[in-house]
Length: 309
Image (cartoon, rainbow, N blue to C red; front, top):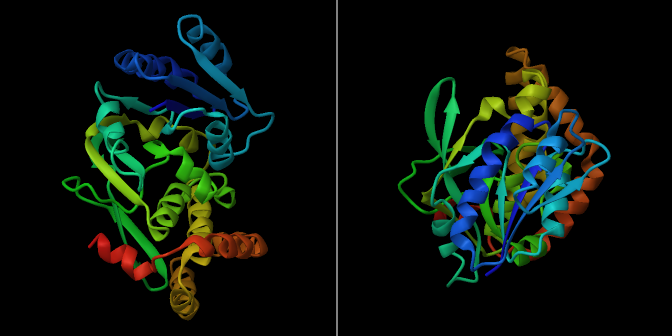
C-alpha cells in the first residue's frame, strides 16, 4: 500500500507551522510504506510559501501552486491527480492529527476492495466547546437531503469529510473526483460520498482515528461573510439534489419548492433566493453532470438512506 497526504492551503501560514510537523511525526511510524506529502497552495496572499520552504529543509514536501484562487474542489482535485499513492489522506490545514490516527484508517482498505472512504473522529472546536463529529446521517425531507451529525458509536456514515478522511484513488478516479460545480466550498464531500454509496461502494467512519479541528481558524471564516457562506451552502444544496436525486425525488423537490420559497420570504432569508438563482445559472452544467453520474448508480436513494437507518 502506498500513501499520499494531500493538503489544500489558502492563507494557512500559522496552521501549517503548527500542524504539518505533527503529520510528519505520524509518518515516522510508516517508514516501510511509500509515502508523500503534497500541499496545494490556492494562491495564498500570506507567507504560506515561506513557511513551506522552511519546513522543506527538514521534510520532503511537494508543493503545487495555483496562479489564482480556485476554491476547495479544484485545489483538492489538483493534489489528488498529482498523487502517486493508492490511498489519499485529505487533511485541511486547520486539522491537527492525534498520535496514531493513520493506522486505524488504513486498516479498512486492506481486505475490502469496495471501501472507498474512511472518516476520522473529528474533535471539532466550536465556540470554546468540543463537539464530536465525523459520522454523518441524513434523510430526504420536503425535497432536500437534510444532513446531520450522527453519534460516533457506529462505523457507517453518509459521508466522509474532505478535510479529514482517507480515500481510495482508483475509486476516486472512477467517480470523477470532487464535483467542481460546488466551488468554492461545501457539499462536495457529501456529494462524492453519496455518489460512491449509490455506485455500490462503502463509506465508513473510524472512531479510533482522531483529529482536532479548529473550525474558527480555517480559511472560510476568514475570507467570507456569514451571508456569503449561507448563500453558497444553499446553492450547493440545490446542485446536490439536481445532480443525484432519483426522478421521483426530483418531482417531490419541485412540488416542495413553493413551500420553501414562501418560508424563506417570511424569514427574510434572501440568501436562499440568491443561492437558488446561482444554482439555476449553472443548470446546463448540472444536467450534464447528472447525465454522467446517473450511469454508474446501482442503488436508489431509498436504499442508501435505509442502510444508515
